[in-house]
Amino acid sequence: FALSGVASLGEMQHRLLHDTAYARQLLLDLSINVTEMFRDPAFYLAIRQEVIPILQTYPFIKVWHAGCSTGEEAYSMAILLKEEGLYDRAQIYATDFNDVVLQKAREGIFSIEHIKDYTLNYQRAGGKTSFVEYYTAHHHSIILDRSLKKNIVFANHNLETDGVFGEMHLILCRNVLIYFSKPLQNRVIKLFHDSLCRQGLICLGSKETLRFSDSVEGFEELVAQEKIYRKREPRLPYSVA
Image (tube, rainbow, N blue to C red; front, side, top):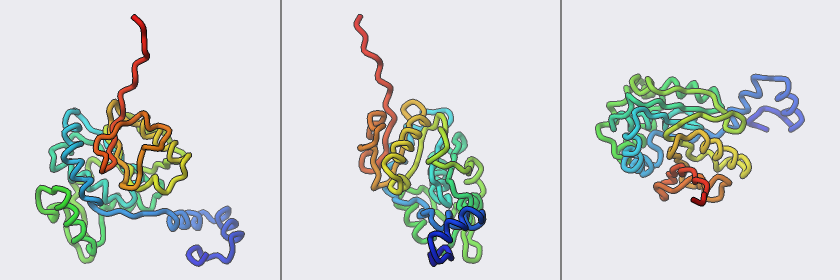
């Protein structure tokens, strides 16, 4: 109640129904936005080693970052694809239900206090140059290079209510499903399955799994330790000659 500035649940309910600005601010306060550049470097190293060779077989690549928050991980993917020579033939769709964090993601401006951690993450993720090549320092902020934005589309998408993003080659939804109920997890995983192209890839967070999902039969493990899965080929109906 202290965070939302009300004295009771009844007062909160009344304000939610009658004060649009208050409802938006409360949604922002309650949404969880934990992210960083090259978060979990071992995961990005696995992307370089195991996923990039698969993506290289496509003439054009569509990547969906679902629950992108303030955009650091989407920009990390842009850097990785650029270093692997794939960014010019890739389109990244970075989505979130929170318009405030999406605007920050579009700006590509982040606090300089995290730059040492970001640089170390980048190096551990197999970075091929110096991380300073991708940003400009300005006062207490870093401004990411404009070239990283050219193939990223930031858009509002609610995993609970919105529909399929079609024919994606790679979907990343890391550390989002852990906050969902089991029925919502099942809905979202089916949404991802239906949004992937044939043999498309999906990446989850370290504490997430498809093992207990209703759609588990639709996927196979590609890199088990890093929770990277591949969409299975549909089984052909059995027929007797």
